[in-house]
Length: 427
Image (cartoon, rainbow, N blue to C red; front, side):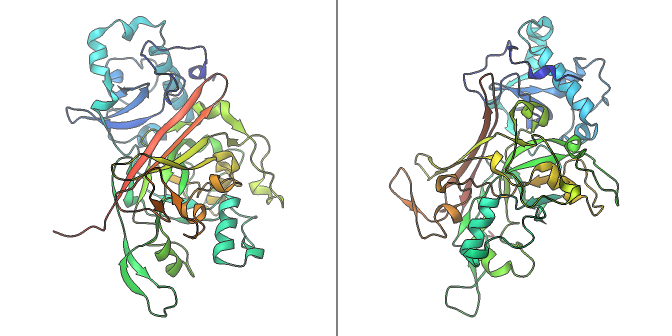
């Protein structure tokens, strides 16, 4: 089935600002709360949120097999469960409805008033009920930088790293959408030169620039997903800030890896950009040496050219961009991550989220964390207001943005923006 929604000649009858992340060729999916406190599944064109539940009730999806309440829910899980054919049919239909040449909704003021909202009048929600969250560690540059800092620089990568997409299971209960503030975590740390740990606020809170992919129901327990089929089970992608407490992490991560240093908060962008929308931006990833084992081998273009940036904005100050990088630098692809994840028969469900791991590029200004950008705090970054940062200060806002662009179209993710607050105190 062709992806007619990607037609770059198509224009919408809704106004779309220049360089918008959300032209009619994007059509992401999300969940929002209206002024009337109604939660609905929606999409976005330009600066307008579109109520897909209302569109369905008004019969704009006639001819597409959907359950009656498909879009009148507070998560996308059921829609994602319907699979790739339904995703493509719905996205193609939305593009047709909002095409400047299609009068049905364009010329019906009553329907438009029911269906279309200004983005400033809605509140974005978490788009899916995330049952399970896995975070990978798939940037060679990031893994090498961390290895140089914490281990022998000559053997920065552990022996397994070039053979498997390394990952760990995160905590879904503390995944939040953009604009939800995050509290500085309390935890146990070992001060330099000491032999006895102390308990208190983390002094080294960091961001991690990541993306994540959202899966559909992929397999039954015991069944593996062949790498050749893995992409069929990936619905789309979001931006992700995997907040990290580096001092807590340093003390706790041996022998089982991250725990409280990571699970206190993970922030994601609210619009899921589909793999269909990202199709024009396929590219090859880095050459993999040694060649992976057969179950992880793939040919062709399985990475994506996604420009990413991170800015830090102090309270009452201007944002300063501290990192520019690209998703295409990732060593392990999403297909390899999913194939490996299920190679032992692990079940993957609709709405599960898989983080890419910190995305770092080859140059110092393309590193994806403060840990790397300041090299463990040794080289502080100066912000526009003249202040310096080794890590994130209370009341700083971390803003992550991402978009793809070619000569024809720009497809973006919007942003994930989160303010760090002091530790939570009970009243």
